[in-house]
Length: 333
Ligand code: AQP
Image 1 (cartoon, rainbow, N blue to C red):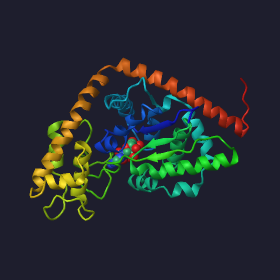
Image 2: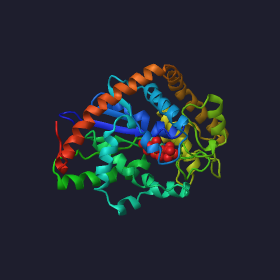
Image 3: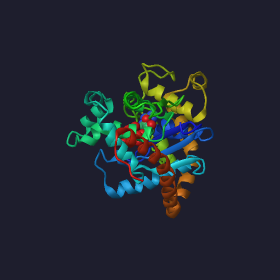
Image 4: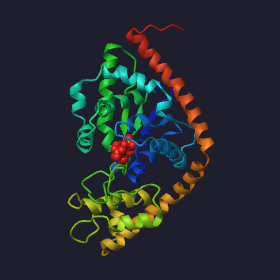
């Protein structure tokens, strides 16, 4: 909370092409806070380097992610849209918070366990302390709410613990944030393995629908999606493949699960998968065309990056300076 105004903060890593999981679980929900909250939405490039990135790809995806924020309807007049590495306070507060985070806490993070298993040749300290930098991202803006997918809830919980610990020693420093999950779409699963989250870094291209996939590709991927035994279109934990498709259909049409089950009663998986592909492609078409427009104007995107970083820095500086003062760092103005 800054003054009287509540704050919403979230970020997306430019670590790959964004998926409909990133869209439905996070980005699509950012906008609803724009009217009543002070909102900060960040492209978290510093998080992305916890896994090796090709520099040219990281740079390109940083522009692309910002263009997608704009294409998803985030108005830069109402939202502070910026790139994390352009606001140095994130890394500085990250270091300070490292000294208030316990080794045991970080060892329990499931994303660290998953990612270190997937990148066994590069289990770097940054991968381990990633949630501390995320806590700094959030706490710098005195954030009240963090719209995220379910996979990030554990990190927001840790952020709360770090903030409470810091506040106990140095009272009234940080606002305690709350994770906000999408009502529908908080965890979109892989099309190839519905027990696994859909992830932008999945090597199996058929497991993932990207926001920018063309219509034919989207429909083809849904046609190939793994479904379960039987033929009924029914939402059921025993049928994770079909249930995931029902969730996606519901997210893009706004229909309830019961309505969808009724709509497809007596129909087969083939018809249903085609319908999911079509509604997804229809819903993404607008975002895609706006995205192409925003991406084509690089100068405009750079101007936004600069403006966004200046706006964010103003707030970040205030919190960092407060923290430094409380810690006893010498400040000479
Ligand atoms: N499958 C998903 N369903 C719902 N929400 C999701 N999110 C990610 N995947 C799903 C949410 O998207 C936001 C941005 O994610 P991120 O870029 O911070 O990284 P992540 O959570 O690690 O997402 P990925 O796609 O799995 O990236 P990689 O493969 O690079 O690790 C977050 O709010 C996240 O919850």
